[in-house]
Length: 254
Length: 254
DNA sequence: CGATAATTTGAATTAACTCAACTGTTGTGG
DNA sequence: CCACAACAGTTGAGTTAATTCAAATTATCG
Image (cartoon, rainbow over all chains, first blue to last red):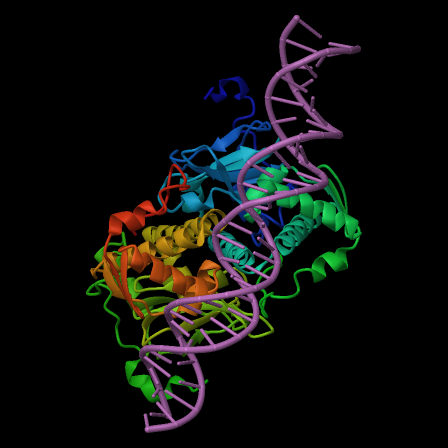
């Protein structure tokens, strides 16, 4: 609502992708330093988004893609009754808003789960730049394609897995994404509530809670509210080895 | 396996997007006639794919995207135990293989459900062409983005709907896609088996069968094996009005 | 025409859900 | 700074939608 007038000082400040720890996980991947510089120039630095604040809402005109720099964001829809349906969680290095390219309008909410810094990429400018930087165009297509693969995997998980396998898969995904960022793969804080996890995995929040307890009883996890420690990563992994596809396309770098 | 040597006569034959009834549903949408001509020149005409034949398999090098011209294709993965997990069904005007851009390798099988004609788009050439035709680049991004939206909708469906709502949604999707192609929205043949539908919707094949019977008993459908007639479209639609998101992004043209 | 595969239908089972009560945590205003 | 309200999480008990297993029936294809 309120305009950016109070933070003009931040506007136009050059964003340094080149110095960013996310550079190999993010859009600049595969670009040479000159092209990264051209990309940097179109990125808007935004003021941090605080817990509970929205990046965008359904129906809003699509102008920009957002890359999470720090923090965490959930995307979700809402029913007329007011129930939230969580679509996904977005961690540093991950892009939000890709579904809106389709028809120029956002189709979901994006809400910060904690204080979050984002890079804003005005899409029309990004598209123009893509046409002149082949590796950027390629990287854009890869990112979209990757999102399709990730979602296809999610569909497969929802179709073919028990509640326990879903939670195991979720925790391994979070673990993997944290570890790529250089954080611990076995000790982290979840930014989202049990309700959010349940909504995302198609489970009742009570089921999620019970599963955390059960995994802790089995010595696989140590759970203290949002603080999760994986005590037996191999056992957690073995929980979803069963009906996994032969050729898994996931877990490819960048 | 066998090379194209027996059908060289078909190779290099110009594919006429301009005369194709799918042109407004397909990649050429939004391109002017000159650009459509440039696109046509890179499309390979392939010999028809017969029922049961594969377009590609997991692990195979990604070279081309495919657009279904006529017929139907299912994409699926396979577990070590040999169980199929259906990811999606692809009807005329729809593209297959978008998930493989990500890492240059296919991650699933694509199998013809009936005799199917496809347009093959060599991806590296398509990418080069995109860089010089802004509207083609835009259309590519839109197509990928659309796929993301469709999959997000599927995730929401699997997370929040009963078996009955899933089947209703599936039938309405098929109906919609047929009607866009100029075919009847209320009278069509399903190319896929009950097993395939069940796998796609995360249901046991017996459940799918029972639901068809129940919808027929309620006067909503007339089902004779693969032949489905929708007798009460409004009632079918009302079955999934309940926990639908407020702002649905789906059902946008092209 | 016969064999194999696909579909339908029935009966019993179960994983996850809903409802409900309770506990612990967090943040806010007096 | 504490009290209390609102929220988030845990645990228990009973219910149910969809499953699995089983059997019968109907297509389809060589």
